[in-house]
Length: 394
View (tube, rainbow, N blue to C red):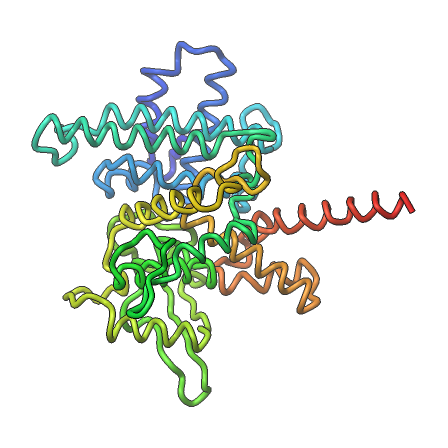
């Protein structure tokens, strides 16, 4: 973790190891340092700066680091994005080991939360504000631990992170917006304008694979109609993986900046939203709301889906999912695209994975398409196994 040439010192990790880890068993120390090395390398690869610089630039806000864990988890499962990383014990990466690494990183973030979420390092005015922030991040850490480190049969569909057809249909049903003539009784959002905005947010996520952070970079001028070529398009600018910043981030990779073709129906829906539905504001953002607000929208969607679709709320059901997140819909888009390209367009799986790189915003070296293909491969394997069993009984 030490970089003598660049003179980069992992100060936060060193403090944590000195205060919390050095007296632990040797195997625990080895696992912890290995996990921190992976996390430090992930931050460097994603943000083009070392961990210390990144955290200080973000004002020592630990919540931002906690929200990096979804991408970190995917990065581990995808083989660390092509980096030549070797664990200290020399073992190969696998799902069980990855869950251990994520657990160790969560413990590290919990330490940082209790040490740096305070009036000394943050702009809190009262003790009450400080305690509330610590408690909020603590709950987020616990939620991430439950979501990312569960194993075995309890993982069910969450292992793949994407939604089944039934789950996605439920999301569509509860987010279909109210109209002037008719209210959607399943939609939990009271106002017509709010329901329409939230419908568009959800639609862009599952139809076009947009990341949550990219929603913040969309403006009222991000979509348009090419009259000469007779097609609609949406311009997106973002970094290699999901952004969890409070503010817009500048473009960092050529594959981050991409243009997606829009269906004419969705173009018209966006146009109507901007011209007739969207609240008047000085902001040029298409959706001038925070990441926290987007998370709250999905929390509400999850509650209504669980209430109206018992199978999805039943832990013993194959359709069970604990919570629906914005990134779940990106996974769903990727899986759906792969299946369509292979089953309908008759492309090979390698060809299909390469074809989703551009729309998904991945570089040619990125291993993320391999990770997103997990559900499709498992589904086809299970289908083949059932056919084999049924065929053998004839």
